[in-house]
Image (cartoon, rainbow, N blue to C red):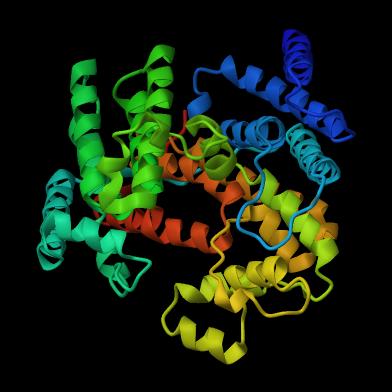
Length: 475
């Protein structure tokens, strides 16, 4: 009962303090928001008692739900920070917040009830064991990736030229046409982690050894993709390293994870400034105020509501559904567009079929609200997430079905991850998939497919080549 009482007190006291400080307004939106806070906090308290929580897919699911349904709306109201750079905005966000909080509450209840259903654990038939030459093969792949990335730097004028090209990406510069090369050259950090995993299996690793490796891994992530503004690539790789090391090489303490979280927000803050300013980042860092993402938000607040949640975008999406009578639902078009983007000749098939992507659909919804075609003159890069993209395709009325589909996708991933022994080579892939779970919830289909192609798929192919399949003997 402790978790229930704690969750109720935590949620109610948080809201009461913000209200008494005149930071959040009273409104009917607080009813579903409070229930979201109670349920998600209760689940996180439950996970806090599990020392293996960081390996559990649903730990990340409930963390995202907690931030999205409870923390994010409180930040939005307390800072009065919603949607920018649009043609029209609502005069009052409270009723929209009530709708979105109700949607989240429905989804949370579905996940909570479905999690109570007993299921048979998934069984694996084969154990993947590393071959004797596995580390040598991975080292050769690392070397090839290093040479290719260094060649790209030389081709673009060194590191300075590379950063300058990135800075000019919106004015005719950038890295257009180099996606395939980056896909291969930026595999180095993954191979480095795999090589470290293979070389140190079964050994007693000291903390200093782990810290030095993590520093080297972080630097390699910056060299291989980080200077191209790819924050998620770096975060995913380092976080995967923490999971792999924690469960197979060195058991981290809670203080270590707190320090890692602090480092995460620091990196995301500096990375956001670099992504915006490119080569001028060091000049921007000379002022403490430049570490603030906006005049209204602190760095941590901004990261929560822009990188980890999609609450305000869903509010605005519902507002535009009501305001834009010209918008036509896409009925799965954005998913087909995403799938065709990453297959040979997919672009020609898309053009032939006239398939619309998520960017086009979102632009039509947000900018063509009065029938005037503005979206073609403006690039829309907002990310709507699984629920938001579902509504773009099939309207808000399918929200229950969307949450059920999302639950079964995540449940299947969870069953597979839980079935893989820590000593199985595929645990390296399992640790990758675990950290992609927040992406499945918060990103659009094109982002998810691209990430799968870039991360788990190449590693799975390499693992298949450097392992032997042995019939799995259960106790």
